[in-house]
Each structure stands twice: as C-alpha cells, then as structure tokens.
Image 1 (cartoon, helix red, strand yellow):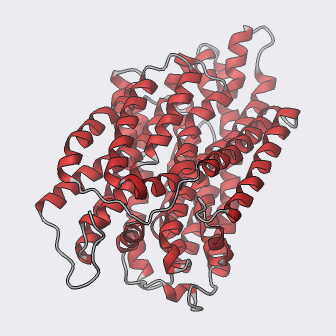
Image 2 (cartoon, rainbow, N blue to C red):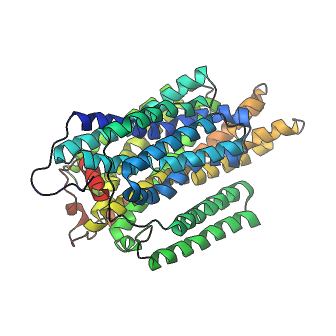
Image 3 (cartoon, one colour):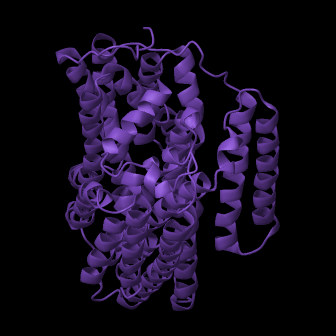
Length: 530
C-alpha cells in the first residue's frame, strides 16, 4: 500500500474500514483488561505457586517492563515489515504466551510467560494506531475512530476486575489469561480480510544492540531496588543498580553514534518534552503502586471474594473514565498544563486520604481515596501524549509518541516494583515481632512474605491475622504518603516548568489547541507513524 496522499480531499472510510476498526479494538480492549485482571488473581496464584515476595512482584511487573522496553522497537519494525503483518505475528505470539501463562506450573515459568506476553503486547498498540491512521484518512472520521480506540482501552480497565472476579469465582487463576486466546484467534482470522497492509519504505533500521542494551539498563536496576527494599544494602542489590546504570550509559553513547538510533536523544534537549515525560511516568507509577495494595487490601484484609472485590473496584474505574471525559472540556477553557497541574493536585488529596486507611474500618476511606486519586490522574492519561508530542518538533512526533507510550507502561511497572516494594518492606517490618516463636517455620515465612500468605497461614490464628492486617495497612499508608508527595511535586512541575517555550518559541500552553479533542491528538500520532 502506498502512502496516503495529502493532496485533494481525503477519501472517507466505508463499511470495511469500520468493521476493521472493530477488529483493531479487540487487542486494545484485551491489553487494558490483561493489566487489571491479574491483580485479583494474586492471592490465588500465590496460594497455588507459592512465589516469594520478589517473584510475586516480578510476575506483576515484568509484563509492563517488556512492553515499555519494546514499544519503540516494535514501532520501527512495523514500519519495515508492515504494520498488519507485525500485528498478526504479535497476536499469534500473545495467544500462545497466554496459554503458557495459564498452565504455568511454577512461579519461574509464569514470570517467563508474562515476559513473552509483554513482548507480544508491545507489537499491538503501535500497530493498531498506525493502521487506524491509514484506514481513516478523513480527519473527522479518524478522530471518531481514535475515540473508539481510547474508549475500548478505558472500558478494558473498568471491566477487568469484574471479568477477573467472575472467572476466579468459577475457575482457577490461569483462566484470567485464557480470555486472550479467542480474541487473538478472531484477529488472526479477520485481520487479513479487513485490515490493509502498510509499510514505510523509509522506515528506520532496527539496531538489535540498542534493544538489548535498553533491557540490560532497566531490569538490573529494578532488581537491585527490589532487593534493597527486601534485604537492605547488600552486594547483590548494589551490583544490580550499578550494572543497570553502566548499561544505561553504554546505551546512551551508542544512540549518539548511530545514524538511525533506537531513541533520538535530541528530543530530550527540549525541556518541556523531558518534563512532560517525567510527569507521565511518575503519575503512572503512583497508579501502579496503588492498585497493587488496593486489590490485596480488598481480598486479604477485608476478606472479599474476587467478584465482590471487582465490584468495589468499579467506583475508581468509573471515576477515571469520567475524569477522562471531563478533561477535554476543561482543556477548552484552561491551558493543558493547568489542567494537568490541577489533576495532580486532586490526586495528591486522594493519596492523602489513603494514608488514613486502617485495617478495621478503612474500606470507605480506601474507596474514596483511590477514586479521588484516579480522577485526578486521568488528566495526565488524556493530555500526556498531547503535551509530549506538542513540545517536540513536528518531524519527531512519531518518536515522541512512542516514548510517551513507553513512559506510561514503564511508569506503571516501575510503581509496582518500587512503591510496592517499599510498602511490602513496611509490612514485613511490622509483622516480624508478631510472629509466634512456636509457629511452623514454613507458615512463619508465609506470614512474613506477604499479606496473602498471612491470610492463608494464619486463618485460624485471629491475633496473628489481625497483626498482619494492621501491618499491611501501615504499608499502604506509607506507600500512599509517597504517592501524595510525588503527585504534589508533579502538580507544581506541570504548572511552573511546563510554562516554557515550545517548538516555535511559543508558550507551550498556546501550542496545543485547547479545542482539539484528545482523540485528534492520538490521531496525529498515528499519522506521524504512518
């Protein structure tokens, strides 16, 4: 397929394109749903596979790290071999990895399956956006199509807990992974019929060395941070951090020498671009760290069934959707940086509420705090890409969009790995003195490891279970306090630092048209990739 011509009137999409949009919406819905259903399965897979605290965190966050690590790579690969071809290859790989995860007999194999799911998942989002931009060349239709795409992502996040709860009430924990198999089968069958192929003859060359270096820079640092929280300063934690930083330096130096780098480092010379990425990454980190404690509190502290926990999670999901819908109207009256700043201020209030949650009567405060925090964060989800792309030169919009997506995915996983680990360390410190000396060694270790392990091992020991719940609430409080501080700093950062010069010397608040909807912003991202 040739590149769409910019001359004349853009052709309008017909029935085939709209049916194709329905096919593209399926993996988008699945990606969002897959991120949320696993949280409810944690207590169940924990009881079955008996992962350590470190393994449990790797099961949770390796998926997001692999997506973040491979997003830019897959975007360039799609340009070279064809977006539809990459999408179908990714769909087949995602389905196979889903089956592997569902029937994983050990924590180690589940971590591997989740890593493969992340790599396959990284092919889906950039491919769907790029194909939408080709299929819908009329600006208004393209905006509507991208709006549908974004609605599916939000809907997947909202219904994930319900779907997960229904499955876990009737089946084993692996069932939450199998929901991806029929979706990918439909995509593999209908995709070649309804979706066009498109490849960019000028697409960049893939530098495999840069791909490897990017992963070697990220994963050892996270390992070191997690081990530091669990064991304190030791040779392994220090080695992990230092090794990751070393490869990070090598990665940056390699990008500077390449004619076609994996990441164009010149983008980071724009202060507004760099700050926008930081806001997006850290705001998503607070979300990742919060959801980890949120789901475990409902199930392990409150003792809810998966379906009941899923229902209690609906207010926060609906609040995020409503906040996303209200953001464009606010952006029509206020500069985007002001909307983001106000949103992060609201998030800080929500996280401060979470510092008051206790193990006895904390449910109303928990639900209210999470809902308020997520309503505020929704402004970043809607306007984050717009701020990143708007602060970069027009010819770099595609690279900027890939980095904004990577920042969002990496932020969530980073929050689980760091803020989640800190909260877990607080729990372990608080429960240590409460473990009876005569308790079986295996049961004692389960109690020390996690709240899920304590709920199982101390089920017939009311005093120990109450102490574990108190310790877990303390961990949640500390994590929420960290999130509140991060959100407050981001609010100031957005309001003050983002008021800087954009690509043409104008104020950033003026370079983004407040009348444009977020869907149009994402549509422009798709255009730049196509």
